[in-house]
Length: 298
Image 1 (spheres, rainbow, N blue to C red):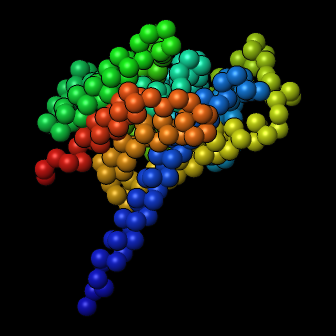
Image 2: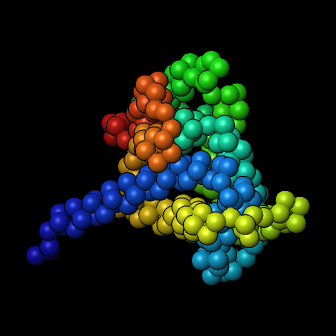
Image 3: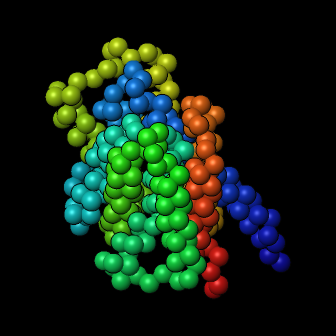
């Protein structure tokens, strides 16, 4: 007789859920940490060096095996680097100079699924079902609520509503390019990080660095949150979640990110958490959950 697979399936489900929730926590921590880095001892290029340099070193065996120019993936790799590498990071950092972490959680990871869906519909002929359409409508409603709730002299500037959504579009471009690149998750992450590190080092003589004057505690904090957690560990945990739960269910957990970022900004950075921002984060989170299609009938 064969062993009952139910306990094994339950353990896999628990492991997948813990991994997916850990990824959401890391993403929210990354938003709060990047916001904390604005105006701190390290500059944007320093943070980018930590964000991509540390994973590039750890994943050296991977990109050394594939080479810097993997056959058949060069054009997709350019879009991947643009959409999630050093250019993406610098754009997001500039936008977060003017945006609290709570609002950034809505305008960046909250809008990413909407941007992915729109690019798929317009350029790739994808046809979302009713659940995904409802999700996109909720994401749009969350962004609109945030916009109207922050109008006025003390609200968000136009930079927040222009730069961070454009960052979400770049991430969507990366998502579609990666799906068509033929690269594994580890290969894609390794190549993005090593090429981003090359770009950062090339800019270093022109921009300079603050590593020699920044507090050691700040360097340690950003090395942990930017390099190890966001750059490396979240990739491994998300792969574990996908293997245990499947891609759709693992992606559904990202619905928590806007709410987690809003709470993290309020607790860690003492940012004001107004009712419109909180409601916008909740609506956007529900929209992300619906846009994954996890509730649709099979």
